Image (cartoon, rainbow, N blue to C red; front, side):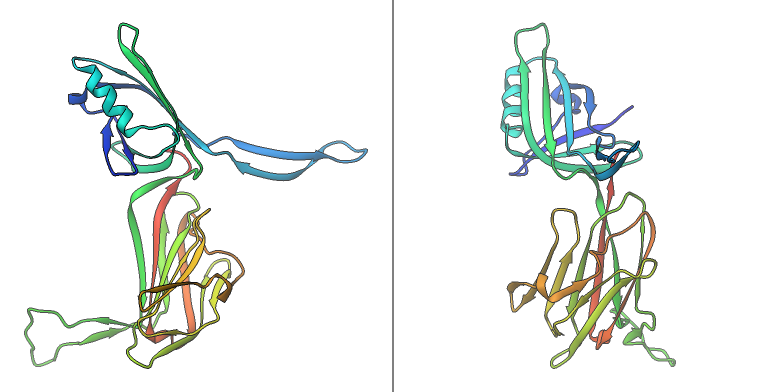
Length: 286
């Protein structure tokens, strides 16, 4: 199978492990499939069988085996050391004809064998976040009015709409991957003096919701992130950020299930809001 494998450090410096000019030859990439699960059980007292305490997926371990060919191997080896440093952050880009994804982690080891007919080595990367993520984002937006006045233009006898009214206050996204966290960006856009209160966003299928107790005024933006390990609620007012995690009530953090997801927006003054839902497709295995 043809694929592209690129490593990127925290400074944005990249190393293409599959570029012919660099003469790297990757023989094997482990850690592309779904991570192993851990099942913890306890035996029943005096009867057969056991009951489940908890079940979870382990961290991802990406292991890259490679060899170097051609001349000036020493320069390429030092280029590898510069990008792939043990205990440091690394981003792994993986691309085939069907998919283009990345994952993030930390370099566990970067082994190089210089004393053989061919310079060979192995890189081990530990990824606490178990998902591979798509490079592109899907954005759904609700806005009571959207602009309809554009340049260049010509006004005919029927007139020109300055905006479009949306009677349906929902956002629809289609998730082609596995369960994934979302980013909700809720902004006051109604103009000076407008306020939105008791805003609730809920999942049309499950009924789960997130409700904002505090009012949102013009030019204020609340960003709610529901990604595993990165959950947050940040309000931005006049360029100053404030933690609002205690001001948002919820049945659960809303996420995107595989397939179609519909989120409804309700509350007082919802017409003064812009609500964006951002989905980056996540895959347990590629």
